[in-house]
Image (cartoon, rainbow over all chains, first blue to last red; front, top):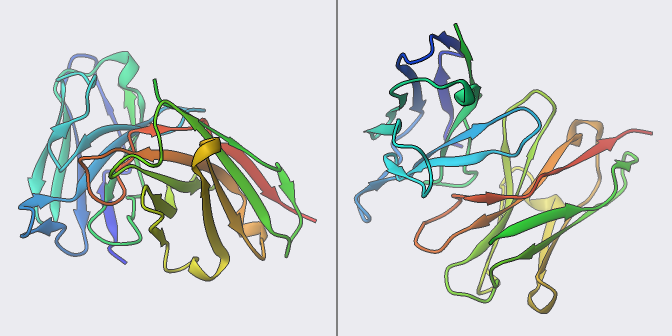
Length: 113
Length: 122
C-alpha cells in the first residue's frame, strides 16, 4: 500500500492568515500515461462526511472557494488556504487514488489561533 | 441533485455478517464511468476505502479486506449493497457510501452519504 503522511498533525492559524498542510506519499502518485497526479484533498467537519476540495492535486472541485489551492507533484503535495475563515475549521485529509487501496493520510486538524 | 443514504444495523455481534445498503438518487449507476464506493472511519481515526463498483459492474475491493467483502448493485432500485463477513470489534466505524463521478479515475468521491455508525459488540 502507498502510505500517506501528513504534516503537521494539527495547526492553529489566525483568521485571515495563510494555512498550509503538507502530504507526502511513500511512492510517486504521478501517472505518466495521464500526466497527472492522483492526489485528492478532503475537508471534514465534526459530525459530517468528508467533502472533496481538490483532485488531480490542483483541480478545485466545483463550488469550492478559490482560497483553497493544491500544489505539488510526485510524492510531495500541499494544500493551502490563502485567508483562513472561521468556517474552515476542520480536519483535512489527503488521499491517493493512484493504486488500491486509495489510502488516506492521518488527517490534519486546523483550528483558529 | 445527487444524494446517497446508508442503511443497515447499528449493532452487530462478533462473527456475524454485516449488510449495508446505499440508496441513491440524482444519477444512474448505468451511466458511463459512474461508480459508487464504500469507505469507513473508526471513531477519531482516518478514512479507509473498502470497495468500489462501476457502471459496468466491475468491482474493486481493498486488498486487505477482499476476502470478507461483496458488492452488488440493483440499478432499477438505485441501490448498492455491501456485505462484510466475520465482523470483529475492530470493524466498529462509521460506514459511508460515496459517488465517484465520471471524468475522474479511481477512487475520487465528490458526494457522500451522511454515514452510519456500526458497532461490533457482543
